[in-house]
Image (cartoon, rainbow, N blue to C red; front, side, top):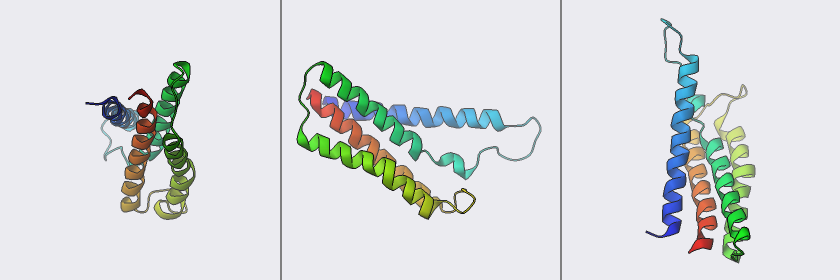
Length: 136
């Protein structure tokens, strides 16, 4: 297994772990003793934000390490990073605002929420792949 695939697998595992821990903390902080109802809401499944930020942090770590070790970064990697970061920080928030959320900021479309989450995982994967390619 190459370092790229290993890095992507670790990063996705960390991202899923962050989502699970965040879900647990949200659940535990909202649950009421003897109260009715399930304390989690559809809005709590908006994981795309965490995944875009996780991709950014992973990419920053890879770039800092590669600069420290004087490893070259290819033009294709730079283009992939620019596209991934533009999509994550410009297009996904716009898509969430227009397609996924209602006027009160609540999720109105589970399909668009799933689409946002899938797009964010792809951005996370692209960012990590671009960073890990330096070490192959």
